[in-house]
Amino acid sequence: MAPVLVEVPSKLKGLLEKWGFEVNEDFVRQLMVDVRDGAVSADDAVGRLRRLPFADLGFARVDHHRSLRQGLAEVVYGPGKTPEQCASIVGELLGQPTGPVLLTRVSPEQAAAALAANPRGERFAGTVVWRSSPPRAERVVLAAAGTSDLPVADECSVVLGAHGVSPQRLNDVGVAGLHRILSEADAVASADAVIVVAGMEGALASVVGGLTAAPVVAVPTSAGYGSSLEGVTALLSMLSSCAAGVTVVGVDNGFGAACAVLRLLNTRDRAEAVVEAVVEAADG
Image (tube, rainbow, N blue to C red):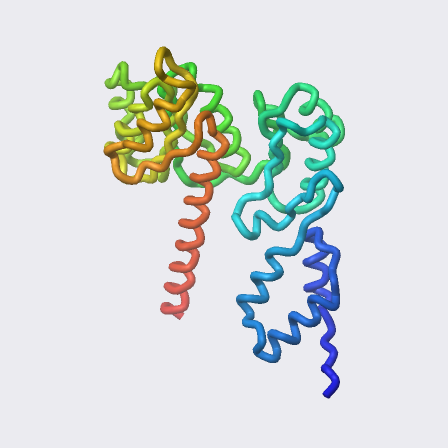
């Protein structure tokens, strides 16, 4: 029996092309047939579509669909790339409506090339941001133990800000003067999430973890004297925290801490949306 042909809806085709996927109509048509015939579930079909769209630039495969899978768009990591490569990848990302575009850990030459080719970006120290997201309502506290930890905290703040989260900054609140963080106990306790950036022995993460029920993400930094071991001492201390549930990212990884918090907030938003939908359905 000859297979019945199924036309790919123009709306679906247009959406896939907008995502940067050069539509293979035979693939999509067969997928629709499989769904119709029960060979593939609707959820499995969505899963297959999620893995498709990327743009091959030769030196990079730009992932246009990452925001759909992860809730966060692809970010361009500067080190190891030429200025021209940075500019090209940023331009490709800006060509799709997938949220903010960030170029991180950039050199002056990389930033200059990317901004020349893609105007309207803003540079914040080592990070360049295009197309920031609208403001969000969540309250995130970003606590830096010492002034030497500020470059890492700044990177974290910029990434959060690009995604619409304006953190409350608590600077120089390390445990050598414990009264400083205790004076901010109300802010810490009422936050939706807290990020702690600390070098030396990294004890601030445990202190903050004992003051709030909110998720705490700890960032060890390479700041410190003697046997700080370029952040390894703070890293091991945070991993051994007696405040249960503190999450720890790598040394000097302010970017990663921001992304961890954004994932948490996005998950909570989705859960709240489901609850609201259930309540509305029950009321109706």
